Length: 183
Image (cartoon, rainbow, N blue to C red; front, side):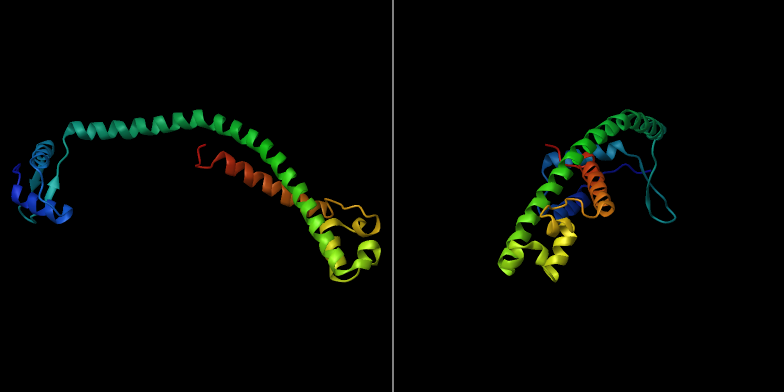
């Protein structure tokens, strides 16, 4: 086995990688690294191999064993914390999604009313006389009662609206719980 430090090769490699000559401290550090590892040379194929000591193999084994135990322990501690965080984020996202639902419906109501006013003055004064595309769009967003009783329905399609709201709540809650952004 050889434990020699080839300073010339190290200088050439260092200069090729870093574009400058190594400092004396860097050469000493490289010499110290050679002493930390046992490197042998196989005579038949000329390949340098690494032979770890028994102590380093035992240390690697214990790290992997206790690493799994530590990972399991941290998961046991983190699961209730994340479930609690998810629960409170579900409540917050429910409130947020419903607020956004009603705000967006009010905004659509004003935008649609403005379009209705600009496109069809007679239909704006008497909504039940509205026909064509404006009536179809208004019925889709606000239900039939928007034209007959002048009252917008915020849930004209209850099943579809419930699915959209439910999915939005869950996506927002998971996004808030597992986001990588720390305030």
